[in-house]
Length: 389
Image 1 (cartoon, rainbow, N blue to C red):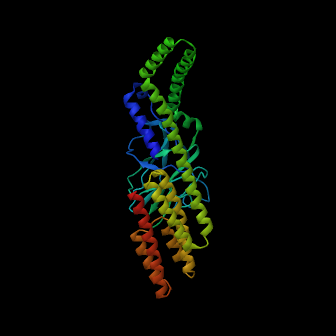
Image 2 (image 1 turned 180 degrees about the horizontal axis):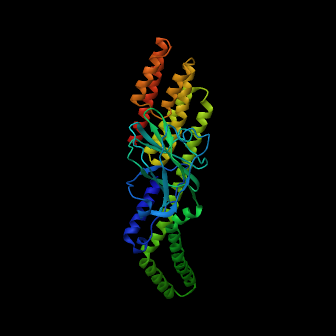
Image 3 (image 1 turned 120 degrees about the vertical axis):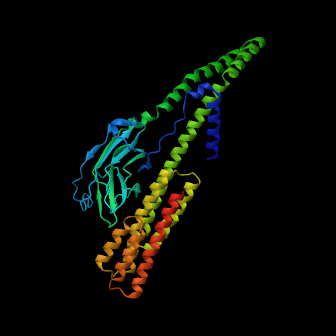
C-alpha cells in the first residue's frame, strides 16, 4: 500500500506540473463484485428527464414463480423500474408503500435467479424510511442482473415487487476504460521519440569527439525540454500498473473471504455454537481489513451480508438444539422475526409474551428469552459496528 501511495503522489505531481498529463486521467480497472453496493442518491425525477440516465432501460419481469413465497403476500404491491446510468450503474425507482405497518424496504439482487427474494438471496441494503424510493447502485456486474424490492411490515408480513433485469455486455465495461486506452495510445506516441533518441546516440559513438559532444548536447537538450513529458509517461505507466495490481489484489481478497465464510459454515454447521463463534471471528477479521484499507466499503457490505445470512440459520439451529420441544407455532413466529436480520425492541417484547404464554417450564422460558436476548444484542452490535465503519 505504501508503494502504491508513493506512485500515486508522483502521478499527481506530474498532472500539476506537466501540461501533457493534464489532458489524461488515471483509470482504475473496475472491480466487478458478485453484488454491487447500493449508494443513496437524491433521485426524485423521472428517468426520461434525468440527464444522467442512459437510453438503456431495464426489462420488467412480472413474477409468476410458485416457488417464490413472497410474490404477493397480504396484498403488498409495489412497482419497480430501472435504467442504466451513463457510468454503468443501476438506477432503481419504485412506488412507495405508505401504509402504517411499514417497517423497511430490502433491495435484493441476483445474477442467476430471475425471482430473487429475501431471505433466500440475502439483501444488498435496507431502508427504514418509506419515502426512500430511488437509489443508484455501484458498478453493475457483467452478464445478467436481476433486481427486486421487498417490503417488510411491522407484523412480519412481506411482499416483493416485480423484477427488473438487465444484461450488461462486456463491451460496455471496456467502453468505461476508454480513458485508459487513450492514455496507452499517448504512451505509444511518445515511445518512438525516446527510441529515436537512443538510436541516434548509439550511431554517434563512431564519430569524432567533437561530433559526439554536439550530439550529447542535443540529446541532453531534448531530454531537458521533454523531461516533464518523459516523467509523466513513466509515472503514468507505473501508476496504471500499480492501480491495476491493487484492483486485482482486492478482488482476489474478496473471493478469499467469501470462500472462508462458506467453508466455515459448511465445516461447523452441525456444531451451532462453534459455527457462531467462527463466524464472529471472521467478522472481526473483515472489520480490520476495512480499517486498514485492504477492502473497500462495497466489499465489506457484501461479506457482512453473507455472514449475516449464515448467522440467521445458525441461530435457528441453536434454538432447535436447546429447545427441541418448542410448540411449532411459537417456533415459526420466532424464526420469522429472526429472518429480518435484526430483532427490534417490538419484536423482542412480542417474543417474550409468546414464550410466557407457552407450556414451557419457568426455567425453560427464562433460558429461551435469555438466548433470544443474546441474539438481539449480537445483531445490534453488528449493525452498530457496520455503521461506525
